[in-house]
Length: 182
Image (tube, rainbow, N blue to C red; front, side, top):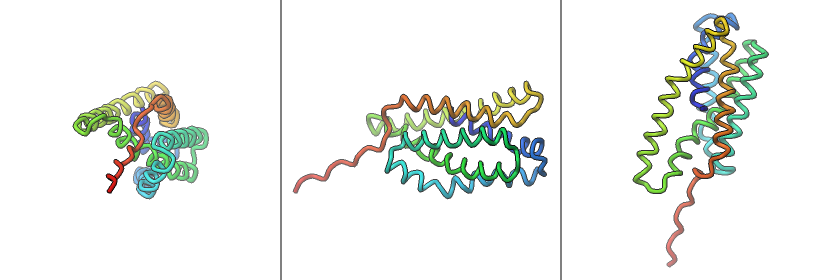
């Protein structure tokens, strides 16, 4: 669910920025880069936070933070505010995305299953990258080319991800084996 939501934003952001914010196409890509830069800056800290409070909790915080920010962006479409939301969103996306695959891998019961679980994760991510833009494109078309809808669609999928993740009971970092007694 979180990949469907994010891919919806990523695909249509430039069209949103041009039609709703009135910026040039070249500037639209620049504005979106605020989230990517923020993601890079917060990638390692999000892993450190997850080691401290848990992957699930870190991801839930990221989902809630990003969803609230995107909903606010729907109501306040101004360039400075959108850039601020994207910076916060990039940090939140790091909390979500950096911890997703390790959480899936740590649900495996044996090391031999890790490749299978990794493959399933990437199948789901690729499917989301395909379906998210298609679904959001339909919604944009149904609302008369209202690209501002990306800030409603994405949070809906983040809420679905939040609810789904709330029921997950595995996937936290496994403690390393204890050293043998001398």
